[in-house]
Image (tube, rainbow, N blue to C red; front, side, top):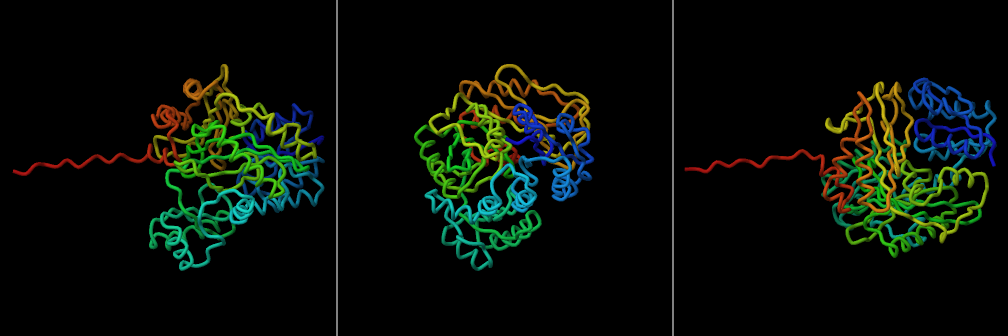
Length: 458
C-alpha cells in the first residue's frame, strides 16, 4: 500500500480523498492555487504545496508544477480526483515515467475510452448496443448530410473528446446541420484541443443511466448497479438517484452483464462509469465511458455500502478486489442534489463571494460532502458547486421527503444557490412519479408564453 498520496485537485473531492487516506493510514499532500490558500483541503492534508496562481492553467492544470510538488514531497502516488487532469493520458504517462503511480486507469485506457468513437467501437464489438450514427470522424458537410438522412433527423453532433455539453448540437434539418457542424468543430477545438466530431441519432426524451464499475489488475470486474442522472441542465447533472425508477432486477442484470463484458474487453482497470441513453421503451444505447471517479459517486457508496475512493486506491496499489458480483447489494433509495453557487431565479447566474452565514443539514440518513465553511470565499475561477447533499432512505418517496427537509435546513448567506430550484424540482409531479427525461429541467425553466387574447369582432 502507498505511504503518501498527492491529491491533484481541489474542493470537496480533494477533501474526500484526504479523508479516505487518513482512514487508510496514508499521508496526504494537498496542492493549491493562490486563490485556494485558505481551503479546507489545504488545512486537513498532512502537507500542502502552492503550485501557482488562481487560473487553472497556472495551477491545477500545471503538470510541471504538480510533478515538482510530488517529487519534493516524495509521494508514491497521485490521485487526480475528477475534472482537471483526471482523464489526461499525457499526465498519466508523465506520472509513470517519474515512477509515481497514477491512481486511475492506464494511459492507453484513457486514450482508447476517452475518444468516443473508439470507445463506441470497442463496446459495440463487446456486444453493447450503440446509437445509430457515423462510424468515423465527420470531415465534410456532404458526409454529414448523407449520414443524417440515412439515420433520419433529429441527429446530434458530438465532440469525440471531452464532455460537459461542449461541441454538441441537435439538428432537425440539413440547413441547421451545416451551420452546427462548423460551430461544434470550433467549440470542440477550443475546449479540448481536438476539432473532431461525429453524428448519431438523437434519442428524444431519453433517460441518462450510468453503471458504476470496479476492475482490478487481475481481470476481476464487478458493477455496482446504476445511477439515474437524467436531471440535467445544459448537459450538466443537477440530481442523481439510485435505483432508477424504471429499472428492475432483470433489466439491471441484462445491462450489468454487458457492462462487465465491455470493461473486460477494453482491458480496463480502476473505477469507472459506463453511460447509456435509454428511451421510453427501455431500449438502451452505450454513450461513453468515464475513466475516473464521478462527482456522484456517493450515491453508489450509500446504496451499496462500498467506499469507492478506498477501492480505487487499493486497485492502484495492486490489490485484488475482495468483493464478487453476488456480494453487491443495493439497499433502499438514494438521492443526491448538487448545490451550486448560482441564482436559479436569474438564469442560474454564478454567485461567487464570501459566505457570512452557513448551516449544513444533518440528522439520520443525511450526508453532506462539501469544502465550504463560514467565512469561506467562493472563487469565480472554478466550478460553482459548493456542496452535495445525499440522502438514503428505505424507498424513493421517503428519500424525497428527507431531501426536502435537508434542503430546508441548508442555510448559506448571502450566497444564492440552486437549493431553491432543487426544492421545486422535488415537488414537480413528473419527478415525483419518476416520469423524467434529460429535458425535464429545460421544460421547467422555459419561459411561459401567455396565449394571445383575441377580441371578438362586431
